[in-house]
Amino acid sequence: TASRETLRKQAAWLRKNSKINIVLEGHADERGTREYNLALGEKRAQSVKNYLIGLGISPDRVSTISYGKERPAVIGSNDGAWSQNRRSVTTVN
Image 1 (cartoon, helix red, strand yellow):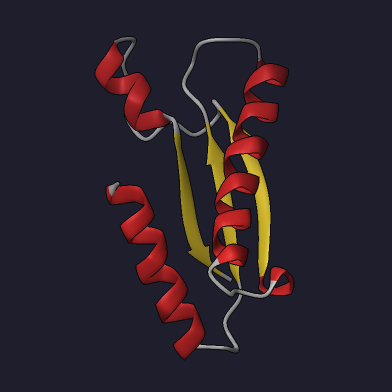
Image 2 (spheres, rainbow, N blue to C red):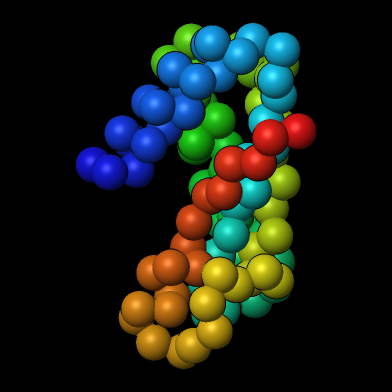
């Protein structure tokens, strides 16, 4: 999938830049309770972390945080908005 290809490229970049750490932000759409979405965002970020670890990135270089539904990428209450808000974002630390 496109997401996995993006993560493979990120892993290659991280291997070349071994002193850089990243934070994986987990996000969810607006549906569900705050607690549910925080847990879902954490699960999403942790899944990406595990994938990167599987590609050879040290777990010490990757941290996770969940924002749940608190930081939507787009505003809207429809399938298009919801799918864009269910995501993991990689930020350089």
